[in-house]
Length: 358
Image (tube, rainbow, N blue to C red; front, side, top):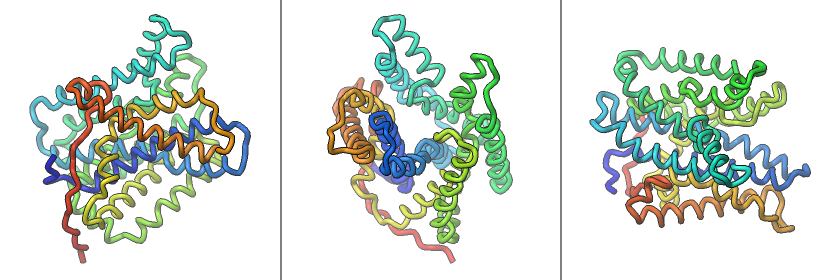
C-alpha cells in the first residue's frame, strides 16, 4: 500500500504500544505461574508498570489519525466501514474468549460470558468499545474543537480526566452490585476516562507539524519527562496502593510523556525499520489475539530453568509470533479480517528528514 501522506511516527507509536500491551499480558501470566516472590519479581513489577502506557497510546493514535485526515469532514460510510473492520472482529473475539472464560462449556455459560465480554467489557479487547465512542465523538465535536484554542481545551480536558479518574482511583465502591461493577470495570468503558488522550490526539493530529516543532524545541524535557512521571507512578503506588492498570490518574502524564518521546525519537529516523512496520501492520490483530495464546500457555508447566522474567519474555515472543502467523493466514481469506481484524499493507519507504525549526 502506498504510504503517501501518512504520518510515519504513527507506525512507531502503534508498534511500541502493541509491544507494550502484549508484553504486559506476558508479565501478567508470569505472575500467575510464579507466585513465590524473588528478586526477579521486582524487575517484572517495574517492567509491568513501565508498559502500562500501551492502551493510552492506542487511544491517542485513533484520534490522532482521524484528526490528521478528517478534521473538517468525515467521508460517507465512515461509521459503516468501521463497524465492519472493528466491531465484527470485536464480537467474534469476545465470543472466542467466552469459550475460554466459561467455567463449564455449555451454551448457557458461553452465552453469559460472551454477553459480559461484548457489552460489559469483561475481555481484554474492551479497547474497541472506547475507540468506537471516539469515532462518534469525533463526528460530533470536530466543529467545536476546530474553533476552540488547544491551549485552553487541552488543560481543561486534562483536569476533567484527572477529576473523573480520581473519583474511582481514590474511593471505595458503594455496597451495590452495579456500583461494584462500575468501580471495577464500567467507569473506564466511557470515553470520559480517556478524554484527555482524545483531545490531545485531535490537536496533535490536526497540527502535526507544529507538534513536531514543539517536541524538537523542548527535546531535553521530552527525554526527561518519562523518567520523572514514571517515578511519580512508583511513589503513588507506595503511598496510595493504586491498582496496577492503565486507567490510573498518574498514567495521564506518563503515557503523554511516552507518546511525545516516541514521536520525537521516531521523527529523527529517515525510514521506518521493517520490524516496526511489520508489527504496526499487524497491531490490531495482535491486540485481539495475544491474550488467546497466553491463556493457552497458562496450563503448561514452565521449564525449571526459567524464572518469572525469562518466562514472561518467552511467552511474549510466542504470543506475538503466533498472533502474526494466525492473522496472516486468516487474512488470506476474504472473511479473515472479520474474525481477527484486518492487517495493513504499508511498506517501508524512505522519508526526508524534517529540519528543525529555529
